[in-house]
Image (cartoon, rainbow, N blue to C red):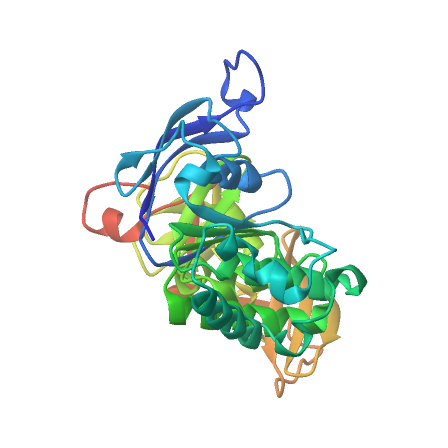
Length: 366
């Protein structure tokens, strides 16, 4: 296992990149701690797989360096980096049995027979393939073949890191939770450094200790699921994390007041006098329909999903979502809406303003 450091890393598929927009991966500087589980989260085309392939050695970056335990491996092959990678679609040897597939990485490295048998049995048990070890891979379903790929990635205990590139794409939905749980168990038991690429926030938030959110080729925030939900660093994080995501309303801000169409919203912090495109961000869970106080609101439709009612509404031509509790009665004279001040975020030009820093007189915005 190893810590992974990305130093001034960037990549472009253009032969002579010049502008920022030419880069599929914009400059990244970060260290992935040894033995932690990370997820790379973002929409298709945001640079997740490009970054993963640079880490694995399948792609040479345009600029910057990849270091394993402070050793520069930028020019090293995948084999020299000693990593395991599981791809989006299953890669198995159809003529081999399940057990032979799982054992292949160990046999290829000349491991002892008893050790190979022990590891194969352990991994097969953890991914639910112990009853299929003598079956040929050729006749298995895509689900089971991908289980083999996952197991083969986990069977070695000497790898620096294990990389997963959207490994549950071909898995039936009812099995995804089971496999994520098994991967977490494997991580807790063996302590490998794991990096898991996905566009599915549920997969990322339930698998990883820290989530790396990417947008438009850039890492916009690295944090725990709690940090991403409560303090998104970028508008995209607020929008992408949560279902539905954070509401955003254009406002002007002066100190502890936000203003919209002549109405005032009290804030818990002093945000100074931000200039640019200023947005108030509030999650649906912290918006409340009222009869007298707050901003005028027009309810568009209500969706009852059992434990919650999701209300779609309009405030000053801006569409917002409200999450009301199961027992909350929505009455016809609820024509106003209030925001919980302790859960309001303010963004300027898409980036979160660090309210605490402004409170302390630094004027800093991040």
